[in-house]
Image (cartoon, rainbow, N blue to C red; front, side, top):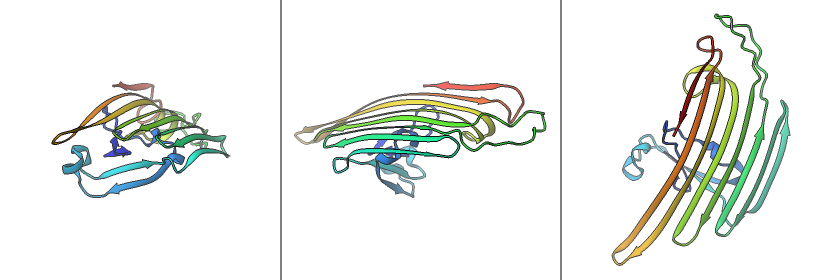
Length: 205
């Protein structure tokens, strides 16, 4: 089970978890439960729990810029105050140039590799309520396994969620109200492996 500030963020279509939602500079700590925890967290925690805790009021504004080889560029900006956190990052990376001989079907393995990612994260909270929302857009073309089969091609994903939590105090206890909406799009293009020709797997929830 993958969570951010105690809120599950796995997408419902494939059940996958995505760290692309969270700019790395906004992470304060990561909690890990290595044992089955379904009795506390539900069925998705059968093999453990990972909970990302983001920075809050003691960190204020944050900015990061960096660059590197293979046209790697990265920018981050975040605002952390008492009651709200806003953060976003943008990465552009052509990656390592893979060059090789043709495969057994005569397909060329030399491609225009890239790994581009943009994301935005918002966390707004009060004494009895909490709103958390995040978005990421991943555009990459790579050589390797995505998600669980060997292929070379495009892997494009876009996802958004908003999670609202409100606590109501009652005479004999507390009532927790949770509302959630998430939207996920995934395109996988198999251009060379494992079979020649072009094929596309497309899914959306």
